[in-house]
Length: 94
Image (cartoon, rainbow, N blue to C red; front, top):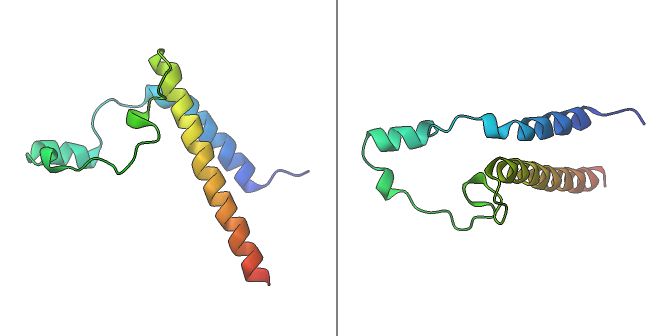
């Protein structure tokens, strides 16, 4: 079987997930602006947290918990996107 472009994209995304503990601990752009302008306290919590703070709950080793959270998140989003693409492709061909 010849690999398709999305195979490479998924492998690349999973490799990035392995490197996720090396990401900056500084706040992202929106969070930084909210802190600098004094309205960070007006932010609302998310309706639900599957993996709060990008650390998989129940695992004490923080680096491993971060990697596992990134891998699960990547696979979850990939699965949803792939399923929707297959569903739309089937409907489009009928």
